[in-house]
Image (cartoon, rainbow over all chains, first blue to last red; front, side):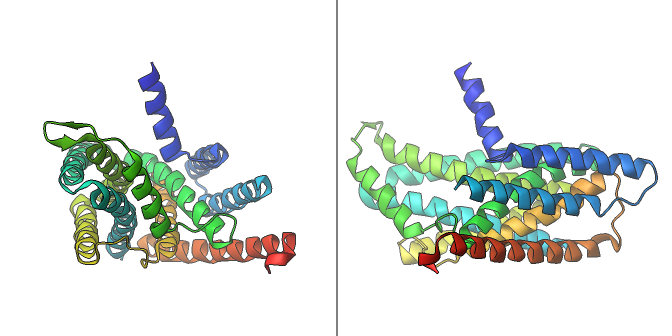
Length: 66
Length: 248
């Protein structure tokens, strides 16, 4: 059990890292992109925009935390 | 075009991780002798090659859109971590990574550790070198596998990592000191930008997006992210200085 927990913690830290909100935001942005594309909209701009917003917000939290 | 970025991304990311692994191996080797750390390096390298050889071709069996969506999203999360740390370092909110300092700390620990020798191997030297190379190398393996399989160029990505390995190992043998002159923090910034660019491009393609200009969009995306990242560095530097006027 301890091995599974530390294995999961390793991969979580490896992929998600310090700020889980970034990974959650990317997942939401990708769902929105897929939905808009499915409706026939051109949604190429959405993910870069989401990346910029998520990065800025994450840095804001990190610098506020000290 | 994307092949150049792919090679560059895999090469730089591999080089910077290998510089960190080299520091660990050097510190242990100089302090406790070379035999056991080198066996550790060989064992970790074999494990990494096996991971790439097993997972790379397996991923290429997945449908390309699913592969790009999943791998792109993972790469994007991973790349944003690199970029976030690089921006925090460049703006002074995090200390710069210093290989010389890491080397001295690792060497002091290696000197203080007890000696447990079995079947002719110093287990401390073996374990520290093995863990160091494996953990730093896992990031390299992840980048090689994701870059290579998504673009269908696993060989090219592996060659880039191989070239970085040869370069860093040669420099390590010649210099026999941590490669503290390598502009590691700048390289990490560039790698963060490249990983985020590729991750955004592939993840969006996997979600069904058609990029204007097809692969040329990679250049635009890289330019946009670089400009935005530099803007954030500038903004955070000003914020830090205004909070600590004594440091200005």
